[in-house]
Image (cartoon, rainbow, N blue to C red):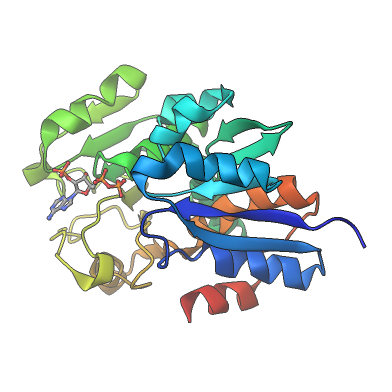
Length: 278
Ligand code: ATR
């Protein structure tokens, strides 16, 4: 038997995290000698908590709220993508040093591409503008993903417009900002609509999108996955638009980290999706 490979997710609080379910599913499915735990580390103990993981011989860990930015200063190396996004969600430990990356961008784009492949969507990044609702941490990963896929135009709209305007510098020729009140006016030409706001999470709030004049080929994607079918997706479906839930992004962001730590290619199966949604 190979040595036990220890991994986990750090956050505060951490009990809500779905990551242990996902990683332990793969550990079992591929019969690996591994463990993936949920590790609660309060912000004031971040340095000590992470040192303990190093001392305990961890191969790496995922990072969630509130440590996604703070972890950077403890890292020996933060790769370009995580630096650009301004957030880390995956850390590898090698020779006692921390190497950080961000797999949320991969999770977002891979989910979209997979949906296009599997469900026969005609969505492809070059077909037209993408509209992004929100300008918080999740929007950063989404916008970087869209830029990497060469989407020709990205229209960002956020309740607090100033936060959306901060994105323009990433690529002023591609990124445009519109007022939150006008968010439905651009749907007639959009190829993709992505909700990155927390509206709709646990059924709270309503984005009040007007899909009546939306481009009939538009794909509506909500990265919120609890509930799986948010009010936004339900409204889109009522207008016969194609929809994509947020569960795939969660599953795909886990994949590269797991493959790195356990040196094993893993599949995202319907069984895994069911488990995470149960
Ligand atoms: P995350 O890291 O999940 O993106 P965040 O950085 O706190 O979390 O961002 C939350 C996003 O949801 C923001 O775009 C926020 O808009 P503001 O920048 O105006 O706060 C958006 N949001 C939250 N509640 C909202 C609401 N009731 N209506 C519209 N947007 C909302």
